[in-house]
Length: 277
Image 1 (cartoon, rainbow, N blue to C red):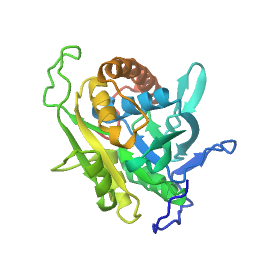
Image 2 (image 1 turned 180 degrees about the vertical axis):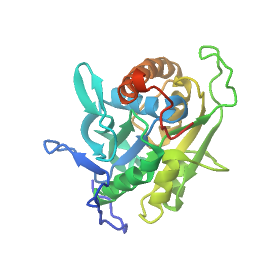
Image 3 (image 1 turned 90 degrees about the vertical axis):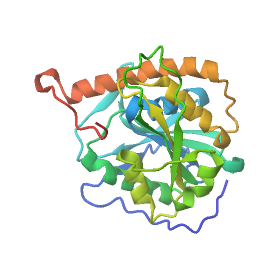
């Protein structure tokens, strides 16, 4: 599939100390014309759990990762195999508004980078996306629930979902049928938004109410449901989806706890430098 665009295509990932996106040279997975959901650990890990669900359900395969030489050396271990914590997955599937895309590239991080690196990571990913001719980006986010004292098993499903987009992502925001967010956005969503303004690349995303104290599979399920208009090939039944999301909730919890333990061992225990406090 070829997608015509007037967007600038030059990328610069050669700045000293700048993060870069590295692609497995053995991979034949193309990115041109792809829809790209992206999630970093935010409130309730809702975006991460949603991405895990998509990766598993669609059978997406890893093909690349972010590499930041300025960050602490951390890998995620799964079944005895080490993986980068900021990975790219790809799968051919009808997607995008009107089914205009034929492949999905899912970008997901299991570890919160320091807030001071967010702009650099966002810039590197956007430069790579523009150079690779991706069609559009969807950032998946959670925000702190007002029901902080709720018990996970008894908490009602989140009902508040808002949307945020840059100028080029307005059509996508309308297609996702999201209420428009009011107020301030921070963290990775804000970094991506700021770096996207001069790229011409459509960027939008749902921001869902999530619980602060534990991974929120219900919020993740709501995110995936709201992605229905851009994932027409994914038939969603909410109840099995929530049960499946609970399994990924536990996997994300284990993976994140393992990475954080190695990054902040007990002898040097203390609050991490995450992007959301």
